[in-house]
Amino acid sequence: MADLFFFGTLRHTPLLELVLGRSGDALNALSAKLPGHGVYQVAGQPFPAIEERQGATAEGVLVQDLSPADLDALNFYEGGFGYALKPVTVQLADGGSAGAEVYFPEPGLWQTEEPWDLAAWVDEWGALSLRAAEEVMAYHGRMSAEEVARSFPSIRRRAAAWLAGQARPGDGVHDLSRDVIVHNHNRAYLNFFAMEEMDLQFRRYDGSMSPVMNRACSMAGHAAVVLPYDPVRDQVLLVEQFRAPPFMMGDAHPWMWEPVAGVIDPGETAEETARREAVEEAGVTVLHLEPVARGYPSSGALAEFIHIFIGIADLSDVSGGGGVAGEGEDIRSRTLSYEEMMEGIDAQTYQDMPLVTAALWLSRHRERLRAEHS
Image (cartoon, rainbow, N blue to C red; front, side, top):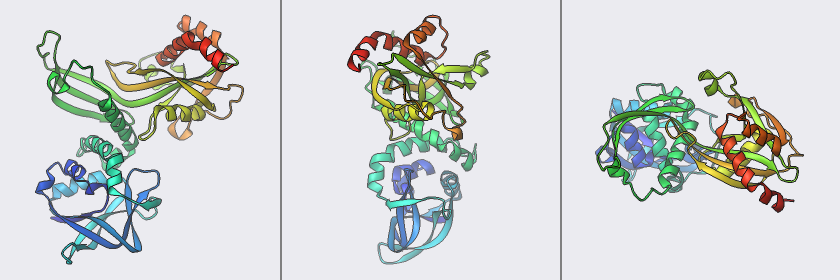
């Protein structure tokens, strides 16, 4: 049996319960402190790290008598992020002391900032971390901790997208607690994207429940799409890049002309993503965003929710772009007249549906935009 001192996110009981797969009421947990150590926010990450600091004291919880299965689950959850157990002596609330182990990061792994606050973390990141941990722990025993850790940024994005979906209002007609029954949920594949499948029933229009059906989808998350438009010059900017899915479908033309697009990171708005991606992919500074549409581009197969914008810009001043090399992007851009783009739309030259959507919206609002920005 093992005794562990938790100083960070696993002090949040719902997260610890999820990782261990059992109730916190069954745990032998005590409030404890680790003198000579502090808990600090990791720069650019939604979690803390513990460091030796003279005069500091790390608040936490000591959980005793953890089983080998508990330890295996905890090592899986923490092990992919460069954390390893080390022995310490903690102080208990009654004035006594106890031996324990703590997950310490590899030296120099993280750059830390201000002291970390558990309550503030729960408010901002608690729900997202719980959703992300569900996906992580679904692969316990199927993948290594390191393999899952490589996919953790996209896991967080999917968790943020799921929470955003939960926050959107329902249709006022269906009650999902009664009108959809999930019999089995299988997370089948994990990488940058994920594949999930469910055995489920839904309520039919005659009031009966459907037969149990197996359905699967590709889990992508949320994305922002922006078509840069210069109303003064009446020009748009498109980007072209190789797209593997059309190639895998056997398409003879897998290099696609598209608007600028990118996945929305947790804590980032769709508008912020659109502006960031315009600079990264096309070297364009967006001056103003016009919302076009938001929704699912292929609701029968793809769990992706996209936000489409027209980005008002000065296309005489385009510099940089080309994508992020570290993400495998190789992008070129082209500026063309509005009329030339619409000729391509009418000729069905373009295969990217968000581009078609943005172009058709622009055709309805172009005169207003030109008048407003002349």
